[in-house]
Image (tube, rainbow, N blue to C red):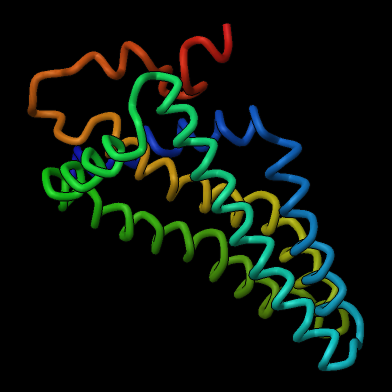
Length: 190
């Protein structure tokens, strides 16, 4: 359990730093699903427009994920960890920290309940029916650039943490010394 929390904390710390360093990228791409969701929930749009919007949202999220992974790999490469070594270290980390990795999914379920189920339940039970559509639209608009984007970054951060520290019980290779846990490569930021 301790290793699960440590892995989750390290991933979240990196995700927060990444979001701040790349706020224009993350927020900019997250605003597309935000606008689409807000429009579909708060207005009556034709089914074809709704479907096209959903496809756009999925493509934008895939693009964001690919860009985040690429930037993370570039950060590791700047610290001397190439893609092949990153892949090998990730596999080793998944093997050595299997329970900690699966513990992240427990944390994700808890986060889902807190940031998705509870707010939607509150809207359904507390907000008057006449205002529920608008309240739901605002909730989804807020979640897209915050909760959803951060969750995506956190998932990449889990992989990054497993690459950097595949086995906390093994002797250190000083990769931590070459990478700042929040800001990435030491040469990137003061």
